[in-house]
Image (cartoon, rainbow, N blue to C red; front, top):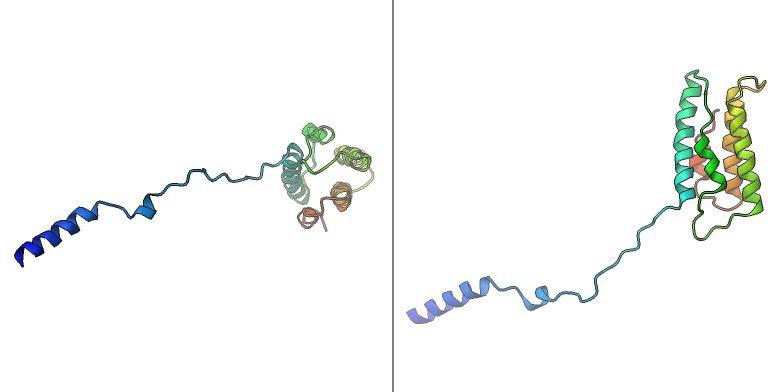
Length: 145
């Protein structure tokens, strides 16, 4: 009886260091995840949004914008997402946006700063209505009421 108990204890101690066979099985094919990588245009538009959000706060606090953000000109050349094409409508809208954005920095304009700012935001919304509608609710938050 005593020998059986010792054998059982030895069996338990010896088996503690072993893992079950199913836990030791490794997959032969590594799992690969597709991660979203934003296009150059998506990154530019996010930069524009952040810039415009800060500019909105500056305008509301009475600060006049002083220098046109030249990196906005990349809108004409930034690489689009794979599923998008640079259409004539997009080119026309991006040209109109840049012109409106430049008027925002014109201190001789007879329009109010808020009106000029909202014109740039409304051009973003109009362009996004032609295709990529997802960001519109976010863009609308930029409007100065």
